[in-house]
Amino acid sequence: MAENNQTAEAARVAAKPKPAVPGAAKPAAPGGAKPAVSGAAKPTAPQSGVYKPPVDRPDSNPYKDSRINALNGWFSERFYMVIPIVDYLKKKEVPQHRHSVWYYFGGLTLFFFILQILTGLLLMQYYKPTEAEAFASFVFIQQKVPFGWLIRQVHAWSANGMILMAFIHMFSTFFMKAYRKPRELMWVSGFVLFVLSLGFGFTGYLLPWNELAFFATQVGTEVPKVAPGGAFLVSILRGGEEISGETLTRMFSMHVVLLPGILMIVLAAHLMLVQILGTSAPIGYKESGRITGYEKFFPDFLAKDVIGWLVGFALLIYLSIVFPWGIGVKANALAPAPVGIKPEWYFWGQFLLLKDFSFPGGELVAILLFTSAAIVWALVPFIDKKASREEKSPYFTMFGLFLCIAFLVYTFRVFLLYGF
Ligand code: HEM
Image (cartoon, rainbow, N blue to C red; front, side, top):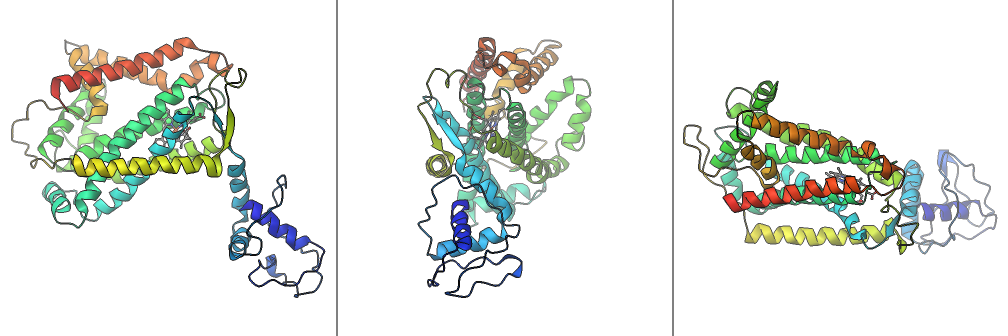
């Protein structure tokens, strides 16, 4: 767009008289300046606040005499403040090397999040967040609303997809040390996004108000009680002592208002930092010539991103049709808890850790262990001084490997013990 604008600008100030071409872009007349009379020599147009990016590319515009250029000129004149941003995006480049594939996972996480918002908005048209109606409204969406089943299934699968992509994105940026100076806040904002994504999963789980969700939330919200001040936190989460309709209302408002609101603000900061600071390359790659080239973010990298999104979308539809999530039976607080109750897969690690530490005082130790590891993880860019000096930091790589393997082993153990 900026390039086209430059052409329009160049055409405007050109001294040569030119006959008007039908369909050609009209010269801009900001501030009410009169358009040049056809065939007359153009005056040097008074330049209003229209932004003129520095010309550093060949001035070729394939749309010079087309309607596209006219439309472009119309928008450029009104939204000139975004021209530097578009111009910047056109200049942004992504380094290419043998690990470049990992650069696509942030975009995939974003794509699944966008799907969550869209499908969530549709579900909200029929969902009723009350103890009496929640389960029935879910059955109604699944069985009566046209394509309701598909929207619900895509929402459930895409939630899992988003968290899985966020896991992969987080570990890949960790191992590439993409958090190192000056990207510290990219990492910290990313960490906050990750915690918020888990919050989405946790609060959304109760919404169908079925037996499994009811008891899993009961177990899950019990955990903080062992920590000092935890009981207070639990009563806030539950809206009382026990899981009830109050809890459902709270989880619902967190799921559809509080968490999306915070996530969008943090996401905006994360993406803005990504654009401003650009994409990093692993330590030493530039110096050792392992960068094979640079790819334009717009349109080349973005086009490949979109291909990844389409593949992800096709997979979601496949999973939604072939492996649909069940509805279960309506929650009943008086019924005994079903055997083998467990949370969603992304909480399996913490779940089993607590079970492994189920000796007196053990749960508090497990919570402390877990919380300390999470704090170190969140602050890693400020602790890993070697990476900031562009030196290899193998101890941090080992720490990341340890967490990654521990998570996988624990998750697999829960799978062996309880099934999926
Ligand atoms: C809702 C969750 C998230 C979304 C939508 C998101 C989105 C993105 C996007 C689109 C990019 C640019 C492309 C790429 O490098 O993959 C990016 C880069 C980055 N993200 Fe995230 N992200 C999320 C979560 C996280 C998490 C959990 C972390 C780490 C704790 C993180 C850390 C980073 C870092 C360090 C970069 C820079 C990569 C580089 O320069 O090489 N992000 N993110």
